[in-house]
Image (cartoon, rainbow, N blue to C red):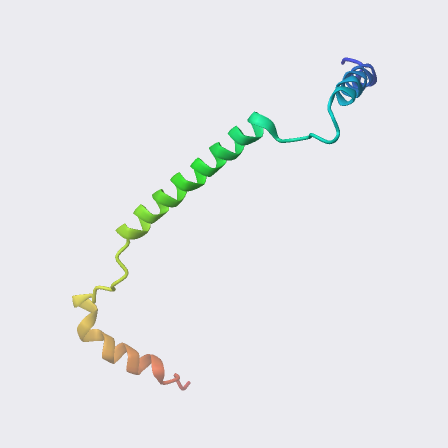
Length: 85
């Protein structure tokens, strides 16, 4: 297993030198930040478009069952009365 403290100290020395080069008054997200934001915006737009398409395919009206039409009134009346026993 590699020595983690050695690699951590090496990373810290490289980051410290990089931090000295960055102007503290001009920190911006840059081109990479814009690209990441644009990709995320396009992904959300595509997901919303897909969701809209799927929601338009859903039929919200309930179709009555012809088999249950004759037995519904008898079952509903029987279910409304509690059983005595």
